[in-house]
Each structure stands twice: as structure tokens, then as C-alpha cells.
Length: 48
Image (cartoon, rainbow, N blue to C red; front, top):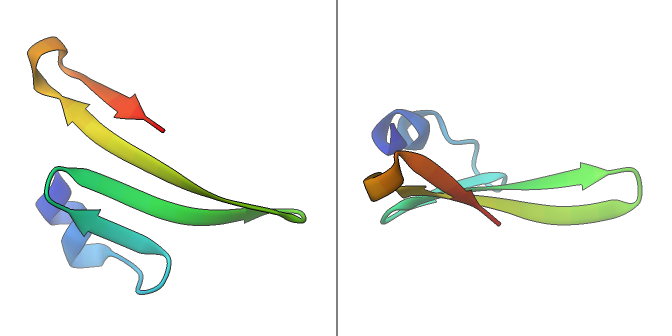
């Protein structure tokens, strides 16, 4: 999955690293970063 996202990442907006995907975003006047990491033992993701 991370390979798929890395191949399509938008420069300056999305980052794919060793075991994580991150995307910057803007909502109105607020800016933030969403980061997702897989948690393989439970087949879930950790969202920060």
C-alpha cells in the first residue's frame, strides 16, 4: 500500500517514508498534518 501511495505522492503535500504516510492539509485558516502508520498485529492503522 505504501508503495502505491509513494508512486503517486504530490510533492510538497504528501510524504511516504519507512512505514508511514503523511499529508499536509488546510481547512479554512487552520493547517495541519495527518500521519498514518500500519499496526500489523491488529490489521489497523494508527492515525496522528
